[in-house]
Image (cartoon, rainbow, N blue to C red; front, side, top):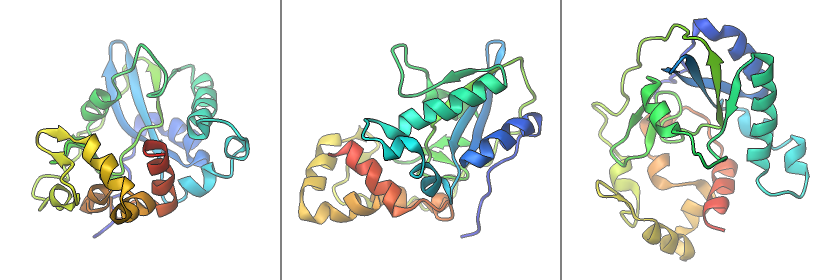
Length: 216
């Protein structure tokens, strides 16, 4: 499948340039009140190798990825006189899923996981910047789920992802069994089946790390 590169946002090119050395990119842009919300996501390939070489991963501390995100995105927020917002701090919890869907680059998939035009079902957001003022927004991207045969809908071996929601109990039970090793070691089969995410470059090591956080 041909690669779908991240959408560029001309109005915030200086921000994109500041994010690039940290292997981050703007994955959505929307207006909220009198501010412009820029959603910040990992830019693969290259993000996982970069972030795991940072001090937070060398220290014996909890939540190294969240700590790194807070440090880096917080510093960039100060540089741009913005407010740094994170999905892992609260209450109050920020509406990151709603923001992503409003940002014009992410869509609800058949399995109700967020599907991004560049990341597919590997979509994730490390934080957001609330920039002062209402900056120009690009046109919304094409929904990658429209016309897709939806292999994600049949990939889960225990049908944990359905139209009725996410059956976390079935998912955890499967991960406890020997046949759940491929999901534990390589990442969720439904996410891996997404055509939109095939070219994203998500490494199995990163997926395995996240699975350990979800299912210790």
